[in-house]
Image (tube, rainbow, N blue to C red; front, side, top):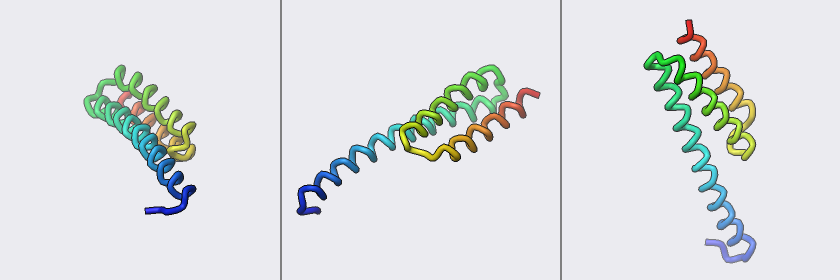
Length: 88
């Protein structure tokens, strides 16, 4: 446990930021799982709308600094490939 005032503040700030990052990542993973479930079921129409929500969640995570922009772009690319595969 920290004794210095600034160190105590750092602990509080990091707890808050950790909680915010966990909330963002949880909603991000949920949206991606919903998309993958639609792809697995072969539902092209719902997969397209779920792709947009997953893509939006990825972009929001980048803006908030939770994930790196290249990671988000890589994941969006992979999701787009899944849509192309079931659209055939």
